[in-house]
Amino acid sequence: MEDGWISSSLYNELHSYLQSVKLIRTNLSKIVHVNNGTYFIKPFNKNYIQWTKNKNFNDYPYSSWKCSNTSSKEPDSHEYCFLTNIYFISANNTYYYYRHPSENKMMSRNQFMSSHGLIEIHILDNISMIKELGISAILTQPIHVGGAPDLNYVHGFLERGGPLFWTLSQIQSHETFIDPSNIQLYYSSKADTDHRTNLWHPMKRLSDGTYLHKARWPNVLNAMFSIYPLLTYKSFDQATIMFKYMIFTGLPYKRSPCWGIYQEPNRLLNYYPFNIEEYRRAYLTFSEWILNNFELYSKFELTPIQKKLQETHKSEQIPICYGLCHQNQSFNQSSIERTFSGEYIAVLNRAGIGRRELINADELVQALLKAFPDDKNPYLRVWPKQFDFNDDLYEAARMARSIRVLIGVHGAGLSNTIFMRPGAILYEITPPGCRILTFFYRRWAEVFNLQHALWSPGDIGDSCIHEGATRVNVDEIVSDVINLVKNENRYRSGYLSRALDLIVKE
Image (cartoon, rainbow, N blue to C red):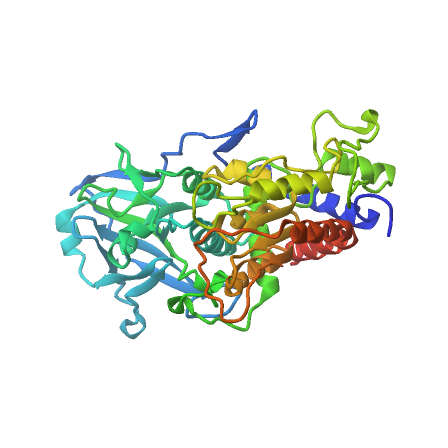
């Protein structure tokens, strides 16, 4: 193995990739910015609506539609459709397609699949009804027809946000990012009428008819997707409007790799064969896109201390204690940077929640601190207390990006492993008898290019109470983590190289 944090040849490849990405993204419009470690969203662009003089509006263009397949070639769920000049009577929540006389009626289509369900669009051969009502406004930007994310973070963030990024980036013909100046998000009524409304993140209506989510993470994610404000079917105060462009991207399930097998019978949507490379590329670019928006380190970017090792052709030195050791076995102080830029071993826990809680999390943290006693080590440290992610996506991404080993009970917080670098380690804990749960994050770890380790006690026949609290065998987990850390550098360059090959593949 070559000295340095990774191999020299791979380091040069990573540098070339980062330079090319920087050039591509420099001129993109964005409204999410970071200042002094805090993100903020600049005002949305209001140049998305053209007001008319209602009944004095005389131009009623014909509608059109065109549907294509995404790269997966599966027409039932990977289809996306692009429609133009669709009329919407918001008073009765009805969409209309004005058919051109030359259009083959046998080829006409009146149903299109949005991410939240099937939308019916009524066909008109005579526009007089719309003329009688009058057009109040034209929405000029390409509108994505979708719905609010699920209240459950993993389903809302990964299984809604990931597929949305995947299809929109393909539609825009650049699969590593989205140009937010060329899309506007719109929530149809399907989430309210076809599903229980308490499944979705609650929103508030602003005075101009646009909407914001009440939680932080959906708002900042939407601001990355679009520089224009969020619209819903309730935005238009009973008016009749025209969508200049509408985009339907189909149901997201076949772009969500973990929906296939789960512990609940109603989720047994078995989608195979599974194209792992395609999923890895899509979710890798999704995470890179978010990190770039937050001005955080790319997964392929070495931190200052890692670059120092690379430039000096040195390897990490991480003291590990197997028994009685002196605390704080520190390196020479001159080698320690003022600001820590290494990585962490961290214990994730929903302390005090009662659901999927790790009862002896503090005991585990203390044992890890003893096993890795150098709390001044510039390369790898134990996060000194248990922690939990909240709804601040920036903080979640920043923290996860700095973690080498994340230890946590099966739950939505493990979704943030999407921001860990390739080759980092997800150590999942399940309650006794709940090994069936491990498919979910084992598959996500595979998609995220991570190593996956597991502590899952129990015998065949044990009942799984997956919402219950869990007490772990601390010695077993610490022993596992020591072995994982000792071997991680052997696989590091391989994981990074494989991930880089995926993201630069034409």
